[in-house]
Image 1: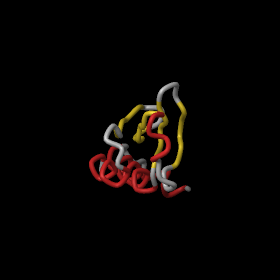
Image 2: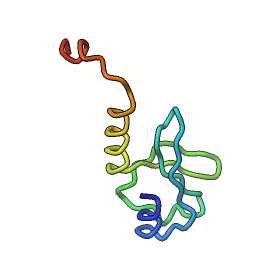
Image 3: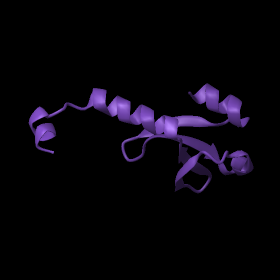
Image 4: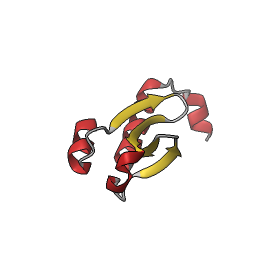
Length: 79
């Protein structure tokens, strides 16, 4: 996905990263702010970079979390 985003945006320094607070995000240095596409969703501003997500990355997170986190079937039935 990272390589796909680099090709689509032309931002060679674009990185896909993970933290426990923001899960998966796209990090782009502020030098490339003019190249950021409209479909990127801003999550956080840092001193030297911006962090973004996309609908596709959010879908991946949801699927990953469903597989990674244990499911309590009783609480699922009651909700």
